[in-house]
Image (cartoon, rainbow, N blue to C red; front, side, top):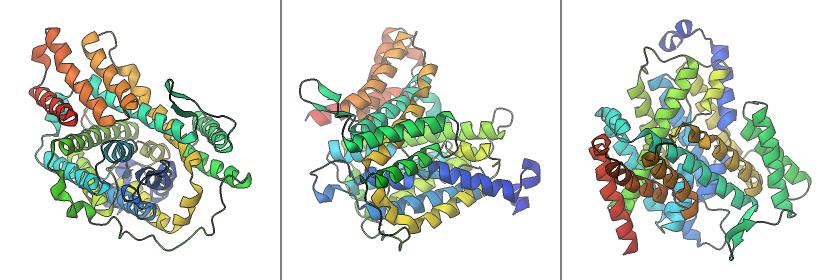
Amino acid sequence: MKNYFQFEKAGTSYKKETVAGITTFLSMAYILFVNPSILSLSTIPDLPDQMRMDQGAVFTATALAAAIGSLIMGLLGRYPIALAPGMGLNAFFAFTVVLTMGIPWQTALSGVMASGLIFIVLTLGGVREKIINAIPQELKLAVGAGIGLFITFIGLQNAGIIVDDPAVLVGLGDLTNGNTLLAIFGIVVTVILMVLRVNAGVFIGMVITAIVGMVVGLIDVPKAVVAPIPSLEPTFGVAIQHFGDIFTIQMLVVILTFLFVDFFDTAGTLVAVANQAGLIKDNKLPRAGKALLADSTATVAGAILGTSTTTSYVESTAGVAAGGRTGFTSIVTAMFFLIALFFSPLLSVVTASVTAPALIIVGALMVSNLSKIKWDAFEVAVPAFLTIIMMPLTYSIATGIAIGFIFYPITMVFKGKRKEIHPIMYGLFVIFVLYFVFLVE
């Protein structure tokens, strides 16, 4: 094992890697409870049951997808990078695809599986570099920032801080409401933990908020802590059964969005973690293809199990900071996700007030890319701005991407920079225009 992971060369040990793996797990353990809440649309009242995914099944699928993805990354990619269903992509799945577009969650899972299969083909075919180079940097950065605003908006709604206002669309909620006060408390605590650079700050913030909620009587104390693993029956294999339903223009845009966000999220995380761990050699990322293959394979596996896109987690940097340098770190993280399968009763204490701070803080972290956009170049600033702002305003990540990608060729052509536009961008322009035409019809 030491030889396979080259412990001596990496200057690490079993102890360091184990501590790093535990640190990474704690930093991203919040997804075990946030993901089932989002995919089941638990914060949206008066929905038909058939629109909601089973929380227990999603919890199990989330833990298994994270374990499988992290294990493959550790063994194949040999990077200290853990995987789990991605924040942003789960919000897109639930609030845009299912809630807004009205696409059944079963078909949406098929879309996730299709995006993973395409990702595998692109990785094996070596096409990934061409696609990365085709999308302008400003639009890549804008997508991440826009998703951050969208997630924050959802978190503020779930907390009751932002509410529906018929006069001005949205307004400030009742800040004297007990659950809203609990969420505000959670936000303050989590922000303080993050400012102090406490590892697993988001997860610890959720734990403290849940405990306070139980103490003051806003959250019911769970009847158990450990229980048998929830059944996967409601979600397992559904993606395969409904695969024939994905061949529409609407689903094509959905699949492209899943693929696009996962593709660049993974690439960005790989570079960030590898940089911190000192693993980049001669400006190149060793075994990048294997790492991307691990990510795409995990997405397919996660979809079959019953969860949205599984992707690499930037929280892995916490494990690297704790000394993780090899894939053994990811294997340790995977083992803890398997252990977590037995703690499903804790789902009952993770209410909207508990998850809202996590959504808001993660969103804040995602908008940091705004500083890297060239705002003085109007031809790229406008498409980037529209991508960012239209995601929360239309309550749709796909719509934000579509509008930005439509405006980019227009502004660039009239700026006299048509030669700088990659042919792939023209293709996406046509697809997204058809998307809006299709929706109007």
